[in-house]
Length: 278
Image 1 (cartoon, rainbow, N blue to C red):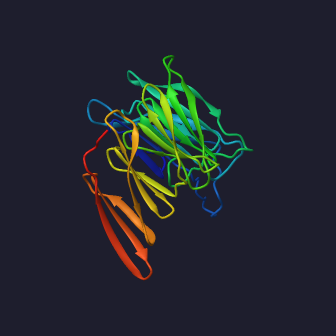
Image 2: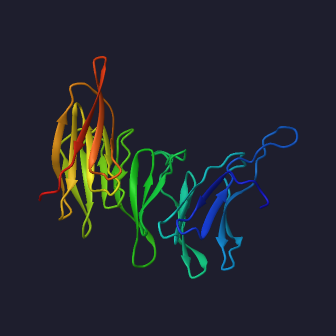
């Protein structure tokens, strides 16, 4: 490789990878280097087990700069690749043996509304092979691949600070809390259906298979379970006498361990989730 990449990401099928640099570095006089352009390199594993460069996705900054930020994420089947900057993104699709631009880059969030944040947490998350979530500072949007082969924004989720929408591990539920602090569960059935939650939620997480959901609401820990018909139902509540420290599911996803503090004492409680009854 003719440059030193700072970031790598392999496709889930291990057939492709992306690499890119975000910092031009310094020259011999310790002055910042300001490249005219930056790029994302896509590598491919051929039939003989050798890696080679497949293509480069060039990005030209509006002005010469030393630092330029990217995001890159593959779909679960490795056939779609999202490449974005602070102002635009593109979706590339693998057709036969070639990568084709399936959606032209476009500014999704203007300067007045704020950009998506590109930091240690990815700003894009695929929830299926043909759907991904794009996260900005103020809202998240769900993009879907339609029958014509183009990508379109189907849902938008405004959210309050530090309450970024959470997608279940199976990709069939999205938890959101909007700016009025109203919590909602979006369920994938024939389309996406919305279920209102009558709590102000502080923390939320799913078990590994996406069948159980735990919410922390004031001094309550509330557990929801998905029924066999695909709907979420409140299973039980646990009222804490003290301050919640942490909680986590067991590997099997049927037991939850809760640590909480009461005065100067620490307590640990185990809840075993029984079989689902609709």
